[in-house]
Length: 140
Image (cartoon, rainbow, N blue to C red; front, top):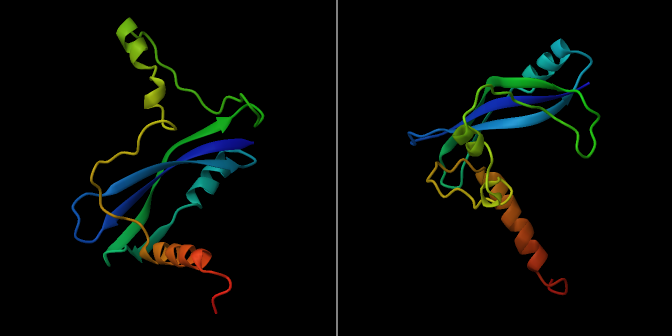
């Protein structure tokens, strides 16, 4: 059986008051609900690294926000999960539907200031790969 686990992780950056929290939807395969729960818990992690400004970033797994079994086969149009509400007004119903520009895939990146939790080592390695790809192969 397939499941979606919503896993909560927190990023804190040395010297910054604000944290950054991610809720990651993760696809899991398990033989039972209990096995899926254990598999989601086994994805727990903690990490520590340095961002490009030299600040220590700490990542910690906080837990599972939700765990949902997928009842349909994984194919185009399969229902992955649902939510249910009862007794909504017309105004509340209208508020459930988003304009195209407000959908995640079309929405402009959020420009809200946030602590830099990027991994400095990964960024340095990526920049080296970019520089290497721009070098003339005939230069020695």
